[in-house]
Length: 79
Image (tube, rainbow, N blue to C red; front, side, top):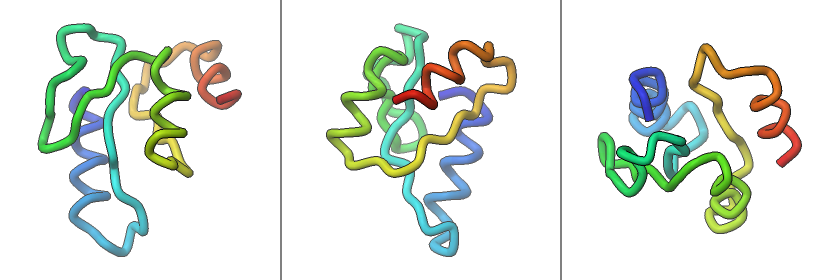
């Protein structure tokens, strides 16, 4: 739910040719969890990702963190 995420979400939600809609952010920062950023909810942390993928029938996950450790990215891919 940082600046990169907001920019990507704005692009996807304002351009129908992208063929996707952002349904929410995942952020481990507890201060952001439960907030709404640019009209998009911040669901929770990484531990919440699998639940949100199922609940919202998500077909794609976009990682918008440039400094994400490799082991965390591998965990996301495994979901």
